[in-house]
Structure formats: C-alpha cells, structure tokens
Length: 92
Image (cartoon, rainbow, N blue to C red):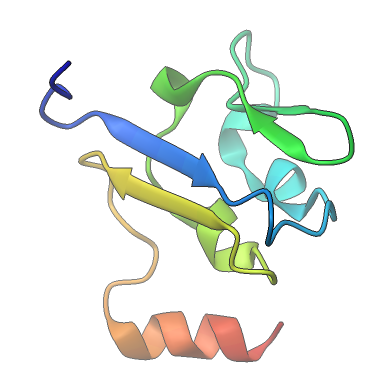
C-alpha cells in the first residue's frame, strides 16, 4: 500500500518510550479537538489519529527518550535548522 503524498507518519518506539506522557501534553492537536492524535495506552502513549497530526514536530522535540518520530507531512517545523533542534534537545 502506497503512502499518499504529504501524509504524516508517527512512530513510537515502545522499547525507548518511558511513559512520561509529555508528548500528549505538548501536542497542539490534543486540546479541544474531536480527533486527538494520541491516547493514553497501557503505560505508554498510542497514536490513534495520524490524520489529525499537523507535523509541527513538537512531540518529537519534547520526547526526552527520543522514542517518537514524525515523518512526512507538509507542516512547518518549529525547528528550521539543526542548531535550533540541538538547542531544544539540550534543555531536556
């Protein structure tokens, strides 16, 4: 099955995830929305609505375990270059 152009793909590495739920708290698509991106699974977050993801990369940036990967999408990243990404990673 081919992935459509611009489709967002979210992957959570269950082995790395520490279950801190910070991705759920940081995601702008979790607040006041009918179709949230994440749900609380059994000890770990679960992706339930990839189509609701705007590919802002906030969840990926906030993940201190580096267990979450966002790929695809045409959203604007809040991290325009690698230096901004490194600075964000340094504060966690």
